[in-house]
Length: 301
Image (cartoon, rainbow, N blue to C red):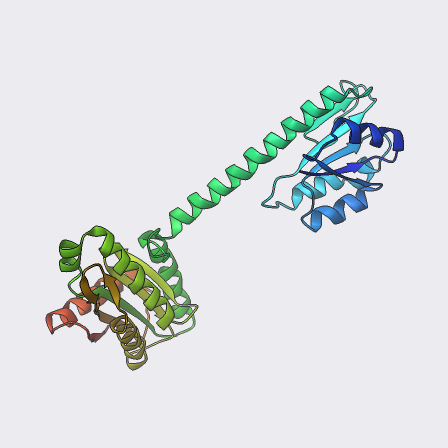
């Protein structure tokens, strides 16, 4: 682990080096809080040992500034002092304080504790990010999940209303997906969903709002798009899915097909809501499947 040491006393720095000697720690000596700030901004060492008495930490309030950065990586500050900590106010932003005279074993224990806290904080941040992602994105396809899509699409609807723009909603449903699942198993069904999702992403615009609605159903919100243009997007997706081949052990490759239903709104009123538009698009995709599948059915609202 890399450690910054803000201490201008060569004897004390040498003691710290000796106490933390070995390959586990790499120490970098700095002489001002400005240098500490530069290292932190560069994403360098996340552990600081600092002389509270002889440095400019209190004057520059660099620890408070570091905390205000809200970096994803945790930062730990261990201060060294000769002051009576019961009488002197502890600097804001400090995690731990060790008093002189320094003892090697005590210093090593304090550093080990800080290292452990940094590790735990890092794991916690990773877990929090994963939970946030799980709350927004579908694990299998990487698209927004149903709740997240509803929220995002409702925002797109409101923005389109304010700008007097149209909006189209595409619902997509894999043809004969139940047969694929029943014949080849759930694992193959998941592979089909992944391949189809990748094709939908490749044939859509990078900024399109795409979600997995349920099972083998996907939805795309297209603000500013109406009628024939929405059909072109759907046909591009259908052609992309039709062109995919999924290998099956001891069987011919699967040629997957998909149907699309479009609900297109030319004029969005104050009473327009996203869920009825989605349901209309889902009804349209049912009409496309009833007509043989692998095609688009468009309705205007």
